[in-house]
Every structure is written in structure tokens, then in C-alpha cells.
Length: 91
Image (cartoon, rainbow, N blue to C red; front, side):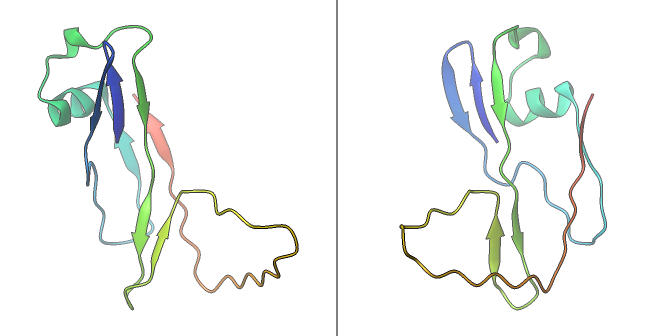
């Protein structure tokens, strides 16, 4: 999670971890505040929170939520062998 609270940017690695799929991630304001070690009352309108998922396949291959970049003329072959669906619910 990358949090911007009152102008202070904080990066929290491994904000949530799941080891079995399918799974559901439920993010509450309390879980965000706890990860940042701040009271909920410190979180205000205009603060922002970004979440990037990283999944590690059982053979160690990593997949993340970052958009890949390609150069013009690159050849790309995409093969999907595994499907991971992550549903985020913000409460």
C-alpha cells in the first residue's frame, strides 16, 4: 500500500497476504489506520491509498499489478496459464 495521509507518503509492504485462492480481500479504514500506526481520525478527505497486487506462483514466478511497457516494433506473445481473480471491497 502506498498511502498519502496529510501530505506524508508512506509505503507499507505486505499490507495483506493470502496463501489460498480464490480469496477475498476486505480493506477497512481500521486496517489501513492500523497498518500506518495512526488513529482513524488522522485520515481525512483528500488522503489517498494505492494498492498494487503481487502474486507469486508456486514455481516462484512473480506477477504484479504494474502495467508493462513495450517499445514500438516489439514482438509480444502472451500466454495465460493461470487465472487469479482478486476482488477488493472497501468498507
